[in-house]
Image (cartoon, rainbow, N blue to C red; front, side):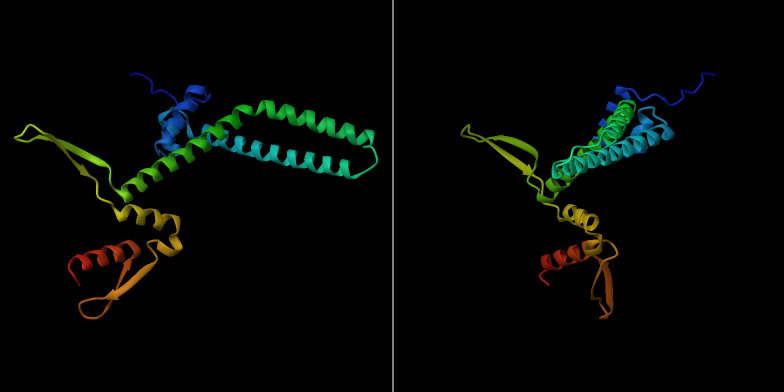
Length: 208
């Protein structure tokens, strides 16, 4: 019996590219990592180390900016022991940055791919909400030989926009935000924001 392949511990460029490709189409990070052969403990460690290093570098940059501002504001020269301290800190920081660059690259690539996947899917939802996309086309030839093409366009779908509102602004439009209207026996009927809109649309179509 063949041995089951073990998930890769080493994160290669090909692995990163595959994870990011799947994230761009909306896959969950765990699903993308598993498909690319990356075990959970590895990608969690790489993401954590990458994020921590990005935050560490930001703090170092802030320290350097504050020091530069103080040096400019002071007429006195920086003491030699202070200069040596800064040089030692910067050397240590550069060494850490070099050793952790792969983690940073992975973290930034994954973070960007997740954002791109989110924007891609939101664009698809926005198109569905607006409608107007060509679904099919049919070409007809009249008796006089003239050719005419008729197109079937997608109808706008308000539910796509409602879906985004429910998740983007849950306190206002989420499933916990209910509307009430009178039922057949004048009893309040609770429904979600999306259900209320749908009920109003159907009532309008019936002429109520």
